[in-house]
Image (cartoon, rainbow, N blue to C red; front, top):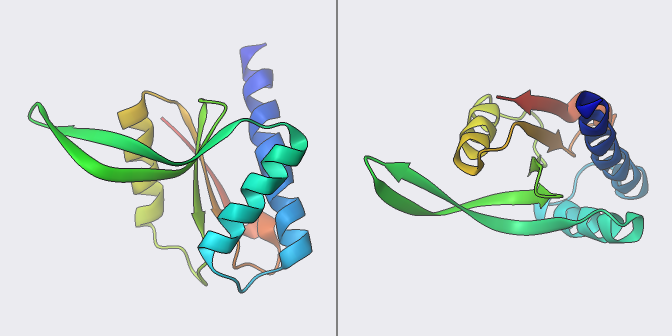
Length: 125
């Protein structure tokens, strides 16, 4: 039953992203998509934190300065992109954020696609 709840939240996030992409299309800056997605989350009653700080640790020392694009419902890390081809390092980066936040699920959403579904990757640890 927990798996169904997990899928429902990621599906709601993806649905909100598709709505933003439907309205704006590809070709804009990542920051525009982030603001629009936050507005869509507000409209749909989805709780989120934008540019949430994440601390990573190296040999017991805190490394600050990292930020997750969106943290949704304190459960899902969402990394946004607006590039023709998202580098493979984005998935690795998202996995690192998941480990640092002790979360299990993430989404990478690249808005610079003709069909947004082609720019969505689910990430889990």
